[in-house]
Image (cartoon, rainbow, N blue to C red; front, side):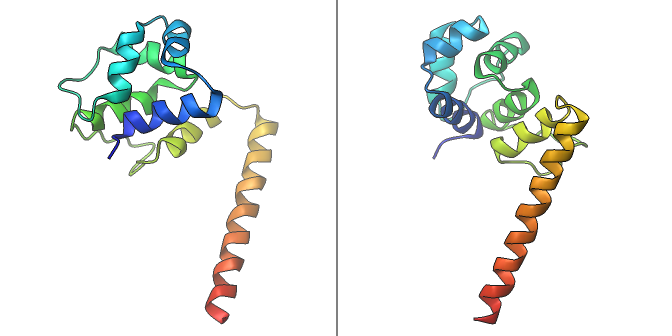
Length: 130
């Protein structure tokens, strides 16, 4: 079963069609480091901050979800006041990235999320009626 860091790396590779070499080049870290982080079931120790920053840059995601996923891969639980209980790397990326959007784009995202939640609630009610 993959750890959160493996899931994050593999998700970004698949989504963008990147290789380990692509991520390494983009992030200024070695290909062997990217490969090790993507394939190790449990990390023996927390990677250095510069490695995590390079990996985040190479993956095109904020460093916070990479840091959190790496900590979990090492068996360390980190607690963040701003995102309690986040275990899904896609959710962590969304939360960390939303502040980079313009206020207009944030409003669009907000409307979309509200619409999706409303639709899911309606589907749940419909399923209960049946």
